[in-house]
Length: 83
Image 1 (cartoon, helix red, strand yellow):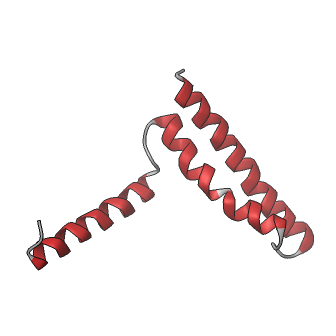
Image 2: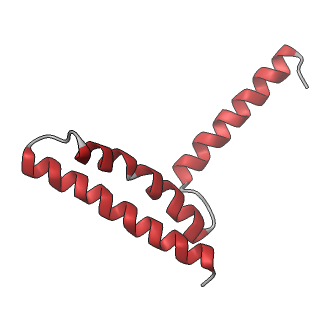
């Protein structure tokens, strides 16, 4: 296992723990606010970055979203006569 794969695995596991921490806090207190909301929201970053490092590619939904944005931008440039 390469070092980037190991780092990706650790980041993914931390992201999953943070995500479930936020869900558990929401279930216990009936709402997600304050520090728990910050943990819950910020868990999305390691959940996106970790699999990319671990498996060598981003999750397919994120990849399709970025590809669609790039294609749309290229079509808009072509329509304006840009390079």
